[in-house]
Length: 330
Image (cartoon, rainbow, N blue to C red; front, side, top):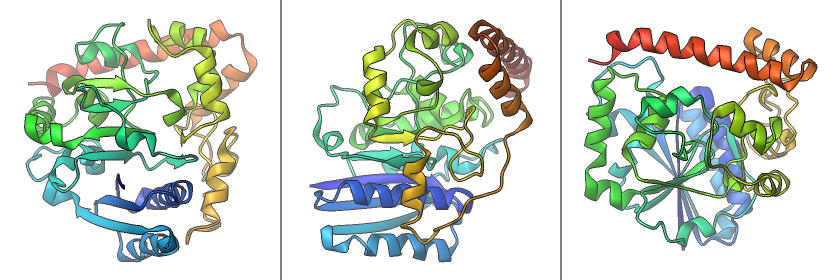
């Protein structure tokens, strides 16, 4: 059995992708072959060597390969400039890797803490992308033509992509057309594009344990993000207790590679980091001003005050995006 995994990154996030790669190898030692594809946005050779060193350390478990795929070669049809790092769109072009039919695609700010074998063989039921349901600003759901009944998936953590279906359907051309229509800046970039154009289904939350699962109850999530259908509280509690993929999304806690991180599951990252060539690399990076304010309100005020603050931020964001729409979408 072969597991195919992918990251899209540059030097800025290569350390974290390396830590996640180590964690995938460590927690899936019973998989005969694991190939990790890096959609390469000018990754430095020294970091490529470090990734290969990680794979070499697990060679006794079976075939472990690191493969680099040039981002600019596979995404050459995307000719618009964007406000985002081009790596953000790398996963949309994974269909160019023709030898792979099913890909497990990870964000760099994740770690794997358990077996991924179930994702290799489950019935995808006609959907081309499976991921964990997200908690997003309702504007982003509305902006892609969906309503409050749609279960919007987070394209971080891990998503399972049926690349064979992507190739047969010609979805890559639709991705490029949609991004170009928005002049390179569609709502919620690659994630919004996938939710807009792909048939999606929802994975159990244990495959993408995000910060809001610790910050809010399920009842609060439904209220705060105007979600009709979400996981049960029991499902969320199980995911937090026995995660398979942890996604360090930043809100309130900061991230574990920064000093002062308070994330409840930060130790997973720190322990894996110590086993990689990046051992000891922690940045002295403080919270942003906005995060500090949100953190203070969350810690010191009743929930309804925090809820009002988030509603205000969302309204402001919505008005800004709407004012930009005439300049962005032609």
